[in-house]
Amino acid sequence: MSRSSSIPLWQLDDIVRRALDEDLGQAGDLTSEAVVPAEHRAEGSIVARAPGCLCGLEAAAAAFRAVDESVEFEALGRDGDEIAGGDRIARVHGPARSLLAAERTALNLLSHLCGIATSTRDLVRRIEGTGARVTCTRKTTPGLRALEKYAVRIGGGHNHRFSLGDAILIKDNHVAIAGGVGAAVERARAVAGHTVRVEVEVEDLSQLEEALAGGADIVLLDNMPVAMLAAAVTKCRGRAVTEASGGIDADTIAEVAATGVDLISVGWITHSAPALDLALDFEST
Image (cartoon, rainbow, N blue to C red):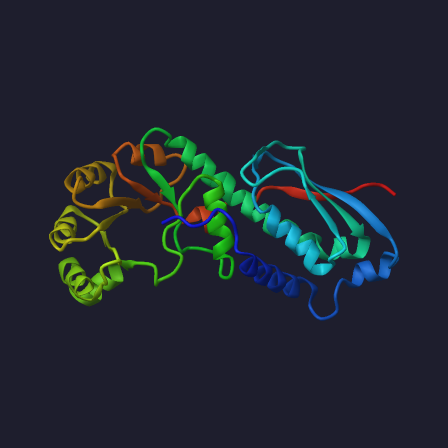
């Protein structure tokens, strides 16, 4: 499932304000208030220390402006741009205390989103030409799902469910409680509206047969060896959309994609992607 390539401002403002509340607390930036004169103005650049995919400029700008509306934020690129180590990606100008108060929140969000977009783009490029799509999961940082899923889209990936209410996805624990894959799919089909698709997780070809017999729209092929995965994809052709999941990384994704699977879901691109190293460098005054 895909969504808009932009972040709704009301979501962004809420995320940024909660992050600033966490960092500034009730007392604000004690160090800057003690060391930096109130009237002092400063100018600086956000600089990439490593190459990657740019993402999160809106979030960084929102952090500075939430602290002080007079801060000027100039983006020097666009989300989705390739950046190299040493590139300046934005400039800021305004009261020095305000810049320092917003600095860490802005960089935390920006570096995290750049990291997700960079990791996603790497995976997408490794499977170019196969027809498979890289998707994220609900394994996101609490409170940051909208931003993290946005970063996946900027990196060329696609979004899985945003919430439990987006679709029916029958997982292993649902199967255990229902008494089997077939029984779980049957119960889901009995209550699902005509616009709701039913996906079911299977671990072997026997469970797959039950899922297909029950009319599952999508099958999540979980932690299958590549040979079994290829056989499963063949069985599903023309009958259900296929999704591979479980321990897939940069070293294994091409082999998984070569099986002909439609979707490859990767949880770590949102919860564990390495942050891109960024810094705010002030100009000497």
